[in-house]
Image (tube, rainbow, N blue to C red):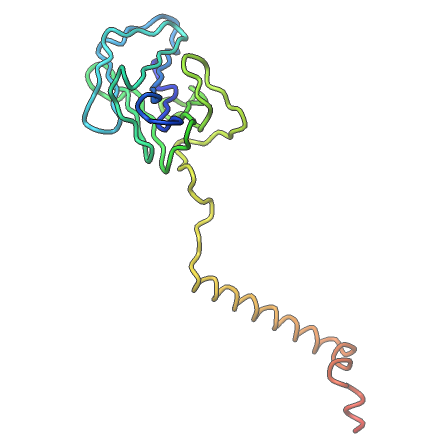
Length: 191
């Protein structure tokens, strides 16, 4: 019932003072985080003993509290439950935009949540101001259509040109009026 709610890997200005990870308790009762730990994709785990989250509440942990360094590119945050198993995780591919947090948009599909880059809301519900929901872990900044090389573009252009030329010639030779107009038709036959 405890989820990674949002995290800010690339704050405006220096990273360490502005970074935070926020957890959310979706349960009907308060919850102690004894036995829980946070990680940022490496082997290091930060124990969360002594912290608690009220029912429906949030806990924002700063870099000063966790000493976790969040990656600005291809980042990941892991929440470990009692026993050391991963209870929740959130990751993104590509570069994190400056000043935006990677925020959970729903809890209905947990542990696979929908995340989006939004304005940070530490201690409060996430907002979806002028941003779309990204399903699962869509890489930020990745092109939707792969780029093609100059060779493939040249071949494509030559193919389109050949098809258009064939169509143009077909229309000319099938239409007597156009053919006569372009090639002299009856005038040429009389000479």
